[in-house]
Image (spheres, rainbow, N blue to C red):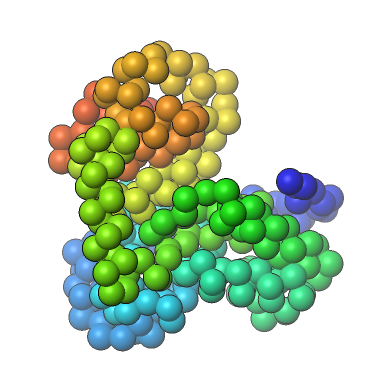
Length: 281
């Protein structure tokens, strides 16, 4: 997979760094936000709330029912109030197909799309086209090799990251089948304790976002911290899926910390370390 590598001027680089380091502004209590979300009756109203309060650059709930969109909004609210700086890494929220359409427009150099993502003063039109083409290439590989279900996070140069949800998983019996699978996976230890809901899958993806903000698994200190846990401890004290890679271990720990009222030792320790790094940064 090729990487997105371009040379930026000092001014462009400062703007990019500032964009990545944005912070969600808490204009009211999370309880007040939940009331606004619960009071909405259409997906357009929910999109307007997200846009007004700066949940992300672009949000598109057109593929979802109001019920599903409200779930996503509540998850975002909980995560953003706990870690306001992750907003700088969430550029698009919506469906997989919606994200691919966004990337296609970006690949065509659509100026409206570039402005919506706040890239008009950072990248040239050609840079934007390259970014869109790379994003489509990444998505094609992800959809082909991964068991993508319910939610996913696509990191695209920190500039067009996608927090994605599969709208087909919420229709008819597909949703019930998926939830039944999640419950079986939790009971078998494939996923952490308490992580058997749609929300827990989304919090797993938020774990990846938080990992990126803290530069945890990409740092030597983070790798050394995780090495304290043996494979046996991870499998019995967190999940089998956490054995896949250090970044999946972190995401599983965050999912358990958010989803379980009494998270176990590994989840508690990893989450506490992330919180410490987040605060110190």
